[in-house]
Length: 376
Ligand code: NAD
Image (tube, rainbow, N blue to C red; front, side, top):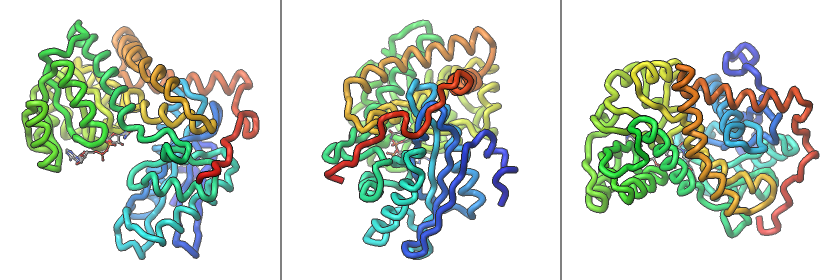
């Protein structure tokens, strides 16, 4: 398994491997950049085929967090962590019980050993309870429950940002900010997708939906008058806007030709299976809201926690600005005939490099560190 030679390693600050035999913890923490602040990014538990796959995943994700945090204007760098489930969990990444609690406490100690250069949060298969277990051992974890000084569930804020970013794209594609009468296809009616549907319905949009859980789509049909289609068909369905809110790589070499919309704007991470697909979308006249820009509401929601604060008003104001941010990226992409993801990457990178070159790179200890939470 290569590290320095791995393409995804490019520009990373450091990568840390942990092995705790007492709890079975095997984890990797990747810190892509701490120029703008401590590297904040979620921790996920995934059944990787092997440790090379885990390494590749964590490296790509941590770089993505640098871009996301930079573009959202946060004083945070980018990092991410992955945990490989122990054999005793028998392939179940959500395996519950004392064993899990002990493993997450060990992971909390690993995070703590980095002295605040990395701040963990929840990601795939990591719950608020897991974060609370990490918090037994370290202050450098966010996404805690409101009762433990946290900012609470980020999903409604993510959904609000998606709705606003989607509207910014509609304004450019259809010359109107009105969603009334437009048709939006939504893939995935989970915590974010459901809220997006609610807002779209309230704004008068017609909905076409797909989810692997039939009860959820049936509810959407009843409450929003949504048309239900197969999970395989949703990507190619004719609509004005496609909103992917389920999983990554939904736009790939096999699906891109079938897209039948003018806008792609949804919450899922890593919607394009590779960056060049952004150019293909641009050439086809489809406006794509870069995923890490439009779905930044979640990380904006936990950003105050990284400073040991709770500040819902600041979060609300910051999320309102996502409509302008997405709009400006789309305008710049159109005027410079480049893909929106390329423009977003460039703006995000420039902010990091400008701070570094101006000698303003964050140093541990230069900012207020999170306070030890008594209730944790
Ligand atoms: P979730 O698990 O609550 O919802 C996902 C939904 O997608 C579920 O209803 C699931 O049944 C459905 N689904 C799964 N596979 C599907 C398929 N093949 N076709 C159709 N539906 C399918 O997750 P969420 O928190 O709503 O997040 C949705 C996406 O947004 C994820 O990609 C996540 O990484 C991303 N995201 C979420 C947040 C947040 O605040 N929750 C923040 C940023 C990004």
